[in-house]
Image (cartoon, rainbow, N blue to C red; front, top):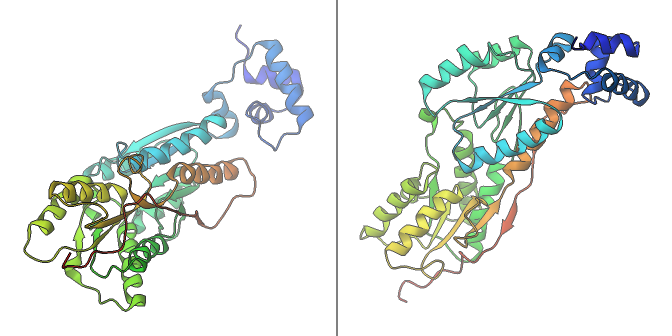
Length: 342
């Protein structure tokens, strides 16, 4: 007869819930009890199951992770950090992919996420509506967001305004005044939080203002966080009869890469003709020799997961949002501007 969790509990002289916690290595069980439970489980040949743990503790040992799309560098990197922490703690990922569409968001959130018996919710770059936040609160599930602030919820990310200002300040310090900003643009149709592109635009504007450089709306163009869209925008600018900007601050490295490829297509050089800087430190940024403000999405995902796991384990959990640092990485894609007559 296959041994059950209650057989281990009887043999060890403890409750079923204590057996579950002990086999998961939770700190709420003292070392002597934990070793006693493990010895009895081994002697009986007991193999714990997720179903048994859920019955004993009310936990499913799975975390609901909601992403706008899986196949992007940032989101996949965050998932890497999430998965590393969950696997170490014996948890699984229940992944919900919104697929960048409003219809899919409605289906995933209302028909799948709220009905799934996960232990917590971790969302990437999503701005939950007031109605969705209320529904999440009603579930009682611990919730955290990675990548952007959401009113009423904890988040893990970077200071977007400060990072964008630092990138723009760098170009200004080199002597640039005609600085094109490639913005992520209006991402509401994709179900993403608009705070990230808006905050990076705000940092760009703040740097210009403090330097006494007039803000020019024509120098803000929508790159939509993709290399293709940003390359097309850069093509339009370089094909026009107007003077070229001397520098580009892209709100993501992927957009910066699109700009660089366009600059090369037009027979120009980086940084001799046009300087380019981004934010992220994308996996391909080194290959493009791109100067950037590096963030660490793997650590952002890991840090958010640790916060959730602490809460689920009954340890003191962080109640406030967490801002992680960015690092300036100079790879040589920026330089002082050339005089127009050169």
